[in-house]
Length: 127
Image (cartoon, rainbow, N blue to C red; front, side):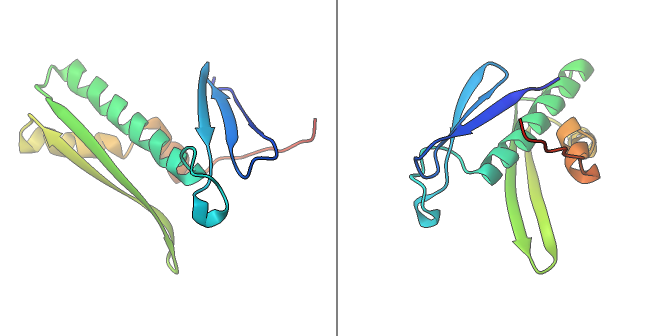
């Protein structure tokens, strides 16, 4: 089970995050009043999806003993009149077309992908 904390003080908008024993600094860009000291919240969301996609597909290719040389997951968050969406593009090196298509299919069912697609209940309480 994952566990994390995020703490913010008076610095606009530097946030110190601790998750899985790792420290991350998040911030907003200067255009939103931050100092751009780290990724913004939606950047971190994309990082999570990208990491989960890459790791899951690497595990799958390894299990199948496929000659996957490299995989790049490019992500873009978009919000507009049609709602919010993430565009994900996979660049796969070392596999044939059938294997590449299978990885694209698997990408649609990675754990973080499914969480984002299915939604998630968030319960908030005061300490």
